[in-house]
Image (cartoon, rainbow, N blue to C red; front, side):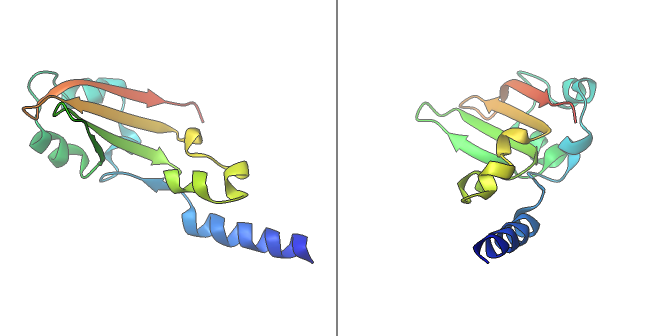
Length: 117
């Protein structure tokens, strides 16, 4: 009976967590070529990036730099759910765009990582 309850809990949790993405969904179809056209190092600003990709997960550093992260796949909360993290992990995300901004809010560098499905 405990196995049935565990299986039911996992199914409910999986349906609640599901697939998640950060931003407005533009990263889902983003290619390396499109990224190079949309993100200009030394020129693109935070406002430009928000307009193009929407809101991101943001990490701010004491030196004033920020990293904005856009992910397509499982949210990081999956990693903290007991037993669920045995089935899926945020490390399984298909696509991730990270953008580093300098103190002035201008793109210093970016990286688009894609995993084969």
